[in-house]
Amino acid sequence: QVQLVESGGGLVQPGGSLRLSCVVSGSISSIYAMGWYRQAPGKQRELVAGFTSGGNANYADSVKGRFTISRDDNRNTVRLQMNSLKPEDTAVYYCKVVLGSISLTHYWGQGTQVTVSS
Image: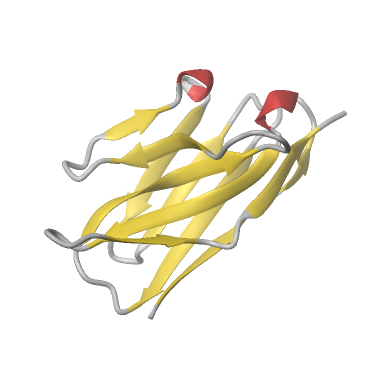
């Protein structure tokens, strides 16, 4: 079984920063991809930032230049540094990991709330 545990969400004022962390544990095979998604009320879940199977990082246009994704493979951890936060960044943030090589399995974390408000 694979578990993803997220942490680091909370309430922050506009212009502030937060760092989210996601620790992956359990029967971890080859990590194909991993990243962060978010879902705001009434909206679809969207990709915020992620690492592709080739190891390249990609970002949603709305967060480029403000968010940075990083990974620590020794600790099976992926982080999202969020700077210059805006009210429109308010959402539940989810960590996702895709394991395998030919046959891929997707796993999601439970989500962590990020609220940007004055």
